[in-house]
Length: 253
Image 1: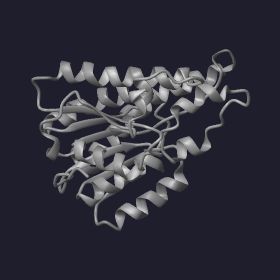
Image 2 (image 1 turned 60 degrees about the horizontal axis):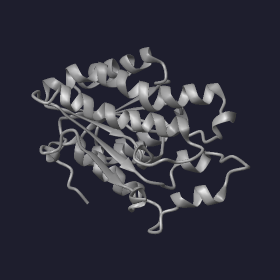
Image 3 (image 1 turned 60 degrees about the vertical axis):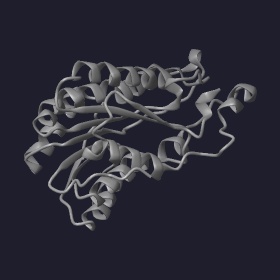
Image 4 (image 1 turned 90 degrees about the vertical axis):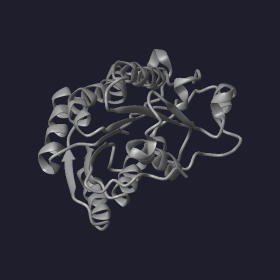
């Protein structure tokens, strides 16, 4: 696994921190010494995550908010900076996956998927980048293997993740000559809270869907979290504008 750099005295904001990749990444960053701002909608699981992280001897801030709202993104960053006096890493791990046939997808599901997976990371980066520039900080966006392949029944999800992947590269180019690193991680299928609760269409075509079953098995959430923590730390100094695929080769086709 990549070795996370020393994060003592640093602070990180992690979205989707109540479970899955977000919570695992927050734990990895805390283990490296970072103070953590945990952002999610679920107060019960956020509190559980906070207890787990506080046991590692770092400071924790819980931010129960809906990042689908632009004002909430700016408020979360402001709260983290006020609590810790700085911000060194932004990890955009919050995720919505609402599979549906294109003609049957509810407008609300489309809007929430795009708002959470694509628009919220942009607003969070808008708010965080001025603070990250002060400390040679980092952004890590969690995208998906579907950014590089056509997956049926996932038009909103695929569009949002492809957009996030390209937005990562666009901002990395914009800040090419400034003291910040902007990268992404593109996982394949995992047994996480998002995938476990998603309901597939009853009338899906199994011949189409079987192509996305990895022959090497599901991706380990901890491996993805290790990469996020690595990219968020100074150990990843040579990475900028990268999108690291961790998908057991499924995006090879």
